[in-house]
Amino acid sequence: LSLSLKILGTSSATFTKERNQTAQALKSNSSYYLIDCGEGTQIQLKKYSIKTNKIDAVFISHLHGDHYLGLFGLLSSMSLKGREKRLSIFGPKGLQEIITIQLQASQSCFSYQIDFQEINVDTITQIYQDKNIKVEVFPVYHRIECYGYKFTTLPEGYKIIKSTLPKNIPLIKIKNLTKGKDVILDDGTVIPYQKHTTPPPAVATYAYCADTRYALEILPYIQGVDTLYHEATFTEEFANRAETTFHATASQAGLIAHQAQVKQLIIGHYSARYKTNEVHLQEAKVEFDNIIALNDGDLIQI
Ligand SMILES: [Zn+2]
Image: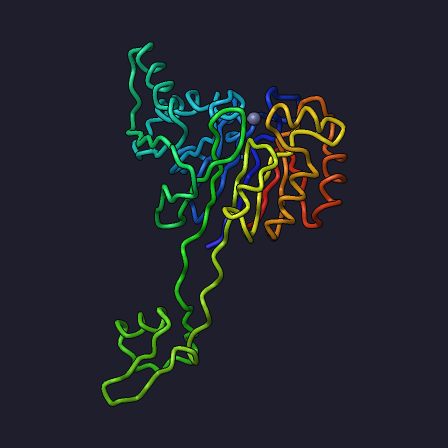
């Protein structure tokens, strides 16, 4: 199983003509997982042809508006389109109440069931698993309670090499080969798994860290992931502002990627004062080589 990531928004606080507020759609198999949901996210989903009915779960990092103000509108549209499938929503305390109050005010209810789970953890903790992925949540360090998420594809079995497999093996025993076990036939013949399978593909890992100051505390949670998203609101010119607002600079994002020995870094959440992300990219590159400065609409393979 692989993961791909559609970038729906890369602006912080306010949107610009080119940049929407933060949201990302992670895809595994045919399921989508929405990470944060800034205002206008449902318009971005439409623009990039992502069907909202394919979204199985939503993960909200914190309750600053640029990360969740699009949620109620999206949930309402799902209902207007007659969604029946349950939806899981994860986020800090308060999110469920915010959604419920809006429903009560309009004396309405959705066409589908929402499973809310309020997050309150001080270390990395698994909160979700389905047939594609497992998700862990961990604290990051912002002005208000804020969480990062780590997504991992489920391990797969050994892959059978059909061309070398003797014809007389019962189906039930082939399953053992996919688990990496030898098969012994009734006549005593040993069928070694190593000869007839290839090892399982590695799992894919993606860690999402927004919004946060530069924090060594998160290193154990993101160590060695395939792709790390780290916010990079400011360039060095505004390093002081990054510190007072509990945001990171691009070079700090690069530094944490280097320290965590991740394979790839992607950055975003740029302050609306920047017209381009060229300086962000340059400054982060000093610390870490394999980096993409995201733009809205980018598709990242993990
Ligand atoms: Zn933000």
